[in-house]
Image (cartoon, rainbow, N blue to C red; front, top):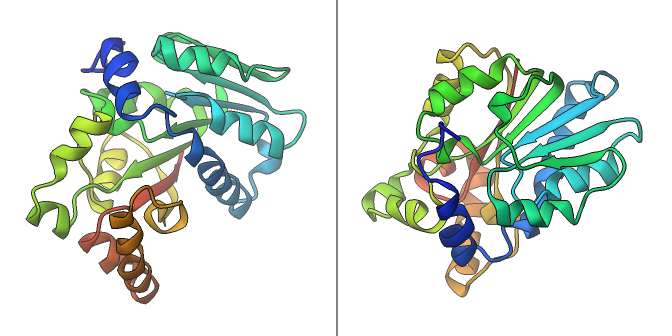
Length: 236
């Protein structure tokens, strides 16, 4: 895929080494946020074809397939051969996966999901322009890596090494890049994986409490200062 700086070797080897479960454990949580956003804007009846770009192990679509209307078609695109092998295990009626470049597809969808993807794409602005015309609605989940703490601790490279992030965003820059590439922002909200999801270490478990307290007091300040939050954006 021309838009990705890291080729399939990275995703088949380094990513798998650092993330052996391919983040499948987070998929029900992400699916729940997707459904809430769809319902908040009364889009349920408008959506009959859903696609996920960079679908990883395919579990997000599998969760949506189980929880949304039985007449919706779900399709996922993934460039990693190892992730695709996990996708294929989840295929069933109305749930299909392709080890192909989504940009080359001529299909049109009601909703395209781009969950934790654009931070991996070298030419992410070109990528965003290319997928804008492939669906009526687009839903993005974007990690907010740039915070006061990550800057002071000089820890941004951790995301680059462990999960292949090439770009880092704040809420303002994430929304700006979508607007600059022609999107109309319908809605956005924070997601708090560092609070909602099980802690992977004692350190992250201890950090959950100040994160939760500050997030309840002032979400914007919490996200600017502390890591572990993302932005969910519905766009047209």
